[in-house]
Length: 403
Image 1: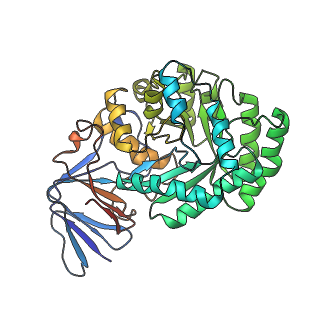
Image 2: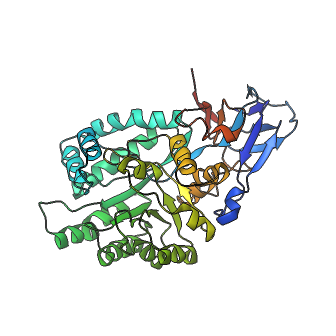
Image 3: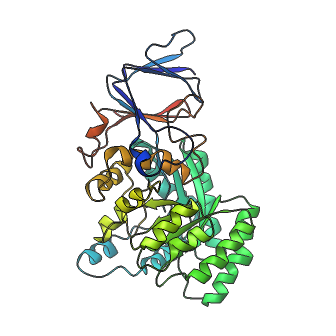
């Protein structure tokens, strides 16, 4: 179906296929009073006036804002139980030590694949309603071959059920189960889990939680080298709780992204820049942990292409709206609204190696876009916590309309 969008007040987009770093993050193209045409899958034209011949449906944007579909490159959106008691206890002064991951693993062990899918589906539908058209989902609450595979199969089922793009990541190295020794568990990841994940094509990336109290640099290096040898691309949870050199390791391994980075060092930031690793920052997690935020401004000053993600998970971040993430990035991390939009679209797409297809609105790219009931894109952080989405178009098809 050929869809024509008319009466667009502002069409806002970054440009290109490469990550936008440093000052380039502010370089959005702003079209006013244009129209956009899709051919049922891709964008075919953006112009002041487009020929109506062959148009199957015309959508009036009513003078609102059009943006690329939002990309969320870091979530743990498939889980069994919520952890509100842990959340509330932490707000009363009990520090986060990561122990809740084991609670989530126990819950997953007693939950069927079908129930995992049924539980995650409403969250993904809400993400879509908030304008997220591409989402990465990690395993990591299995901590055994059987349960990690169960999570990844559930993610694959959700990918078939949802109109959004779903990118699966294997995170068997999220924590250490208590019923098996540390070395034995790492051996299981390398000799059983990674080969099974790859053989069944259940994930595109492999991630490891490289931090104090979790996986050491040496352990992380061993696991990720095995993953790379199996054909998986690499990501790291790095330097969230302490500066353990996770950023430097991500650079050494030429990972696609290093995520969290609340405690990253100046040396780590510079190494990420030298190696071309994308920092994925998760301000919702810092907000929920009431901790300091990642040094986003310093990263941008040094020319890094910062990306944003929700980190939606049952323990440390129950936020799934990228509008809240963008708002926190502007209000708490000092990003301009233009930088935050780039971080949640083009750079986030690069963090999933999908920028050839998505992340900007350009002729030939996938028609993943959202219509907002706003007068200006600069109102996005101003209306913090609101969902301004009126319509979501994914791959040239209308997949959501607000009531």
